[in-house]
Length: 161
Image (cartoon, rainbow, N blue to C red):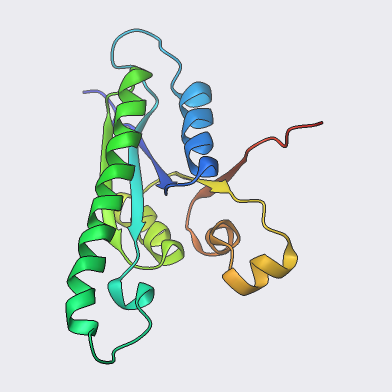
């Protein structure tokens, strides 16, 4: 009986940094070896913001706006996960599952690690400075402190002029 593959969770969003992290991970961990020999089952997780997190008002007209915003958020989630799955297929990585989970990316990724018993979590780095990171919060920083697995932060190299 073959041993079960380890699980790798990778956080996805619509940023260049996220796409780079996926590409780097596929190139370094999933090199084509022929057959189904990939060392990990790959779970791509997109954290869909809740409508209430995006729309900060509940005054007159909110009832008409909320379904439109929700529809747009669902379309964005579908676009991001389909693009990621297509990219995996182009690299001959087939043992891939894409999930869309509503919530804050920090919590969604850490919960996905627990749910799938992942041995590694991969996140991209936006490269925010200290002030922006303090205001927005850092998904990668949060995950390194709260995920119960190895966390790999993939940074896109800066282009030297």
